[in-house]
Length: 477
Image (cartoon, rainbow, N blue to C red):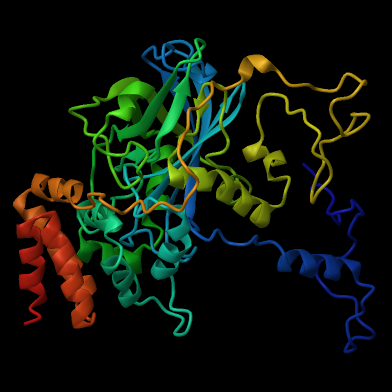
């Protein structure tokens, strides 16, 4: 079979792809060598800006299948009948590090899912932890800065994150998870995924429910201990991505069971904790898990850049029957995530194949970088008299009741940042408690005495044994 014709991006056949055009055998290169200029210009731009967080990731295609009827809670088409299947793309990632980060860093893992439903794309953007470090989005950039490289030294310094955490006890629950065995999952197949935020469901009766999403791994939870993680960081830094890819290649398709927690609007009013606080879980004894379906990943990407690097997730990508909540962190991410993608990929990032809805997209947005789908509309305004697309009132979300004065409320005041972290500590077997506190102390060893003392106070407020174990191992007196 003859080779296909090599061309420029404009389609012009290329006669020579081995040697630059020069003025004489030893002369300078000419600017009229359009093939050289195009290759260099494209090469300079072939990497898009790195994600600020979740920079290093891997992805896979799969299918979500409904196994239990939850249509009384939501009108979302994806859940409308038992046995229904929906195509999905999943992206797993580390969070704070850059693209060169080892897969075995102690770090939360991103767990992002894109469901291609007949009423639009639904993105569930979460982590492998049910809570997060912060509850107020105004602190999100500060928190991430504390996890990144020192802007003066150019390298990471544990002092930065511990100084931040010492003055921000809202982080205690997530810190306890992060430095436990679950802080380093054994690849992506052996960890759970969580929507983390509180979202809302609404049904055909315009009844609203608050919901949390839990994806429980069928492969079982497996973690990597610190010494092994350090070894793998040197010998196999792409361990988790390779593990996922090879499992799917060998048809050992990973699966997760989707379960939800549900609270109705009235019930939420009487909760002892704020149900929209991202640093808190809903106790399973009070709000038991409800089975919904399962996710299976069964196809590897054919092109990493096109499908994984250009995939763009946002919690603002919702569908009828699934909506946001007063969760402050979620409210901010409804803006910040798509805004980051517009910067990274361009304003028309949702036209890329991996991000494109399988249902028809019709609106009056126009032009912008890389627009290529607007073809036959007569004009770009609404209302109009040329039969352009119009609003459909039957898809309107039920009203959300809000009240109170506009102010910058202190979400930390009278908020218990310690009990759930202490509950988690007390649930751990003794050997895991020992590893948790040893991991913490290893990270804190070179801190100043004041920061160490502040953190010991926080750990002690979670649990006296927790604080004493850290205190004893730090040996600061």
